[in-house]
Length: 204
Length: 204
Image 1 (cartoon, chains in turn orange, brown):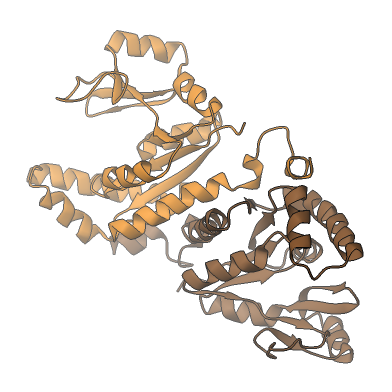
Image 2 (cartoon, rainbow over the protein chains, first blue to last red; image 1 turned 120 degrees about the vertical axis):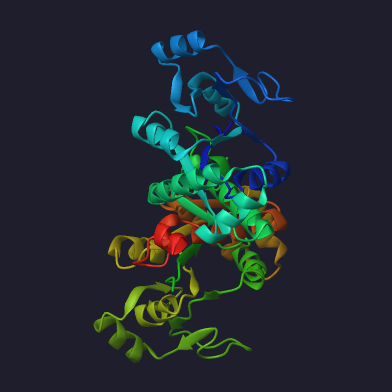
């Protein structure tokens, strides 16, 4: 029984991470999202325990005190956190888990040294293209676009902390590359069934 | 201009490495074999400078003395070596190079610390299947099969020295996985155009 692999994936808003992930998750079996905890209210259609674990601020703070989060962060006034227990359980079942977190959360996880993860940064092809995509949504105010562009510039500074970089210029190419990274990580020799060297597996 | 990536690929005889590589090389652009030097005579159809650089023992020994080989080894009475110059030139042209060498050669290259390479071990699914494949060739004497099986057991001990392990049970699956490893290595963040951080590439 091979233990699952944890993938940490970050991207500036507008880099196309969500679309990319939905393509890749659909075609790779045995790969699931981790379910985060949040204090924000559910949006229409969001389901508790599937999209997020929706909890109150008191419960969230109690979980922080109990050290139950791998990482947590406050974004736009709401708390978001990743519970260790949920991820460990999935990994121990041999499931590969995708952790979709921002660069701040990824840095906390990395520095904690608590879990080994393969980290992937999704980048827009250029700042001009990113701005075009953000405006193309038609849902963002001018102020909001500027804020997101400023954040993106900051987030891109973190790219060197990631093991893999996928530049999302063409969606199909980027999806192929992301799928390749996930498959390749599964082929890493140190990811073999624990306690059973390959020469034993093969020669038995 | 990104410098090319060097892939070291080893496998016990009969693991299906040659077939696997021919499938993968055909579908990944910008990926070529390194051309080794050898003192053995050309087989029918082999071309000098393409399949091998065919040289005499005197020339080979002179190259050894000049330190021109990344690694060399004597196999079944013939000398095989990988010239540094040929590989470096291809890498500097941005071409990814596959180095098809045995575990002995791979160990010498690894220990020399001269070139950074991603190392991949191709394994048969089991020793029983390996024996079946070796006999299935119909070209190997009983003694030869036994020697190859003995060598395979030894070579499998080296697998933990490799970064990636691909178990060649189903050719199509193994080819997908090998292609994934090569693409994923291209996405490694430290493989970006040298001297130009990604945040510069993207924000310019």
